[in-house]
Length: 368
Image (cartoon, rainbow, N blue to C red; front, side, top):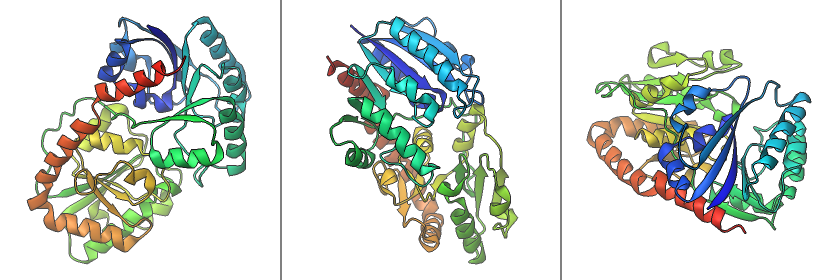
């Protein structure tokens, strides 16, 4: 049985924190799981209590006190390097983003030939600032490793443009589970369009606000747009809300314990993004059988099954989003439950945690 030292930063913990997924892996792979929890993490040690005392799994939680762009981070991560070496693992799997120059020593001190590093973005995009610095960090970091794990075909193709000699393992990210919702039924009279997650330029929430206001002006009043998440410049978006009666606003960090109910009471999850690599929140919608409305960017289209898991519209096109929402409202009574049934079957076939786990096992076993 191979031993894998599996390192997960808290901002990617929802990718790995699934009992069925991890239990399947542990039948064939011994895992020493290092979980790195930062200052403002969504997660705490109590979120991991169900994973205690499982055969073939050892968990070590590391609390990082420094911010990523603080030189003290280097010293804290060097302690993780020491811990990695003491595990005497056959393979090192690194689900940590190279997003700070102070993490470069951590990555370069990890043995390259027996390690797999994840990449959630194929290239530096406009949402990663300053771009010049991210390009340098990525060049240094990914040049060090032979094996890379990615989660979207479009992003893998972009990655190969800069790193053509890398061996890339590409498969889907698993669904994100935030527990069982207590809300059992959705409102049958009002259609709820959900927006969830950090609100910034890349997310293009202003497009959703404008499209919703236009729909209301057309006479549609049987819907609400629910916007939930933290935002550093909410006044910019607030000014665009002409009709407060069709909006539900909760502008703050949404707790993990609130997420399941947030999706359970919503009919559609809307992602009008300008920029996307692959979407974590989309995997929450898939978990809770909430059809999605997404801009037609490759990062979404890689995983959207049009007319089955939801619908796409032309990115940065307000009229296209508005028309998509209008069609959905017009056909909601006749189509919605049929759509959810198709979506449920598709998710069962394509995103089984045990099936995804087998792809990880195959990846680990392919490395000598």
